[in-house]
Length: 115
Image (cartoon, rainbow, N blue to C red; front, top):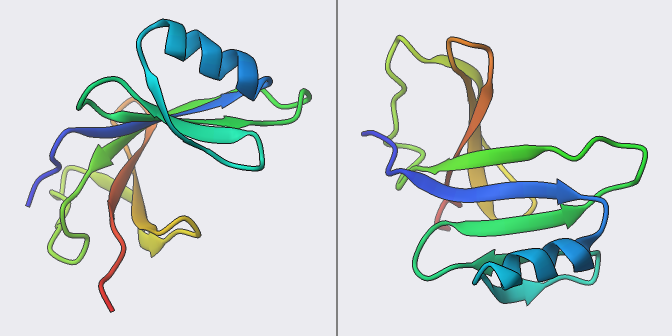
């Protein structure tokens, strides 16, 4: 089983309100906001954008999440370095981290296991 393309982009920001307004100005629509300065936006049917506010003393980061339909059925090719296998997240998905040949980390996201 292979990945299914880009699921999402995760952005860190020093100002959730300004970042959300910026992306709304580019055509993204707010799907939901949390009570801890974060939220999810989407432009059409494309990947979602999740923005989270971080403290001013941290450098904002960005992460691209690749979609996987079924974590249990996914097998990384031997050419792919797996950094962490699929693990449950606190926000209801399962994520795996891999490293590309240039050292960048990529996250693969799958739905949570069904009970």
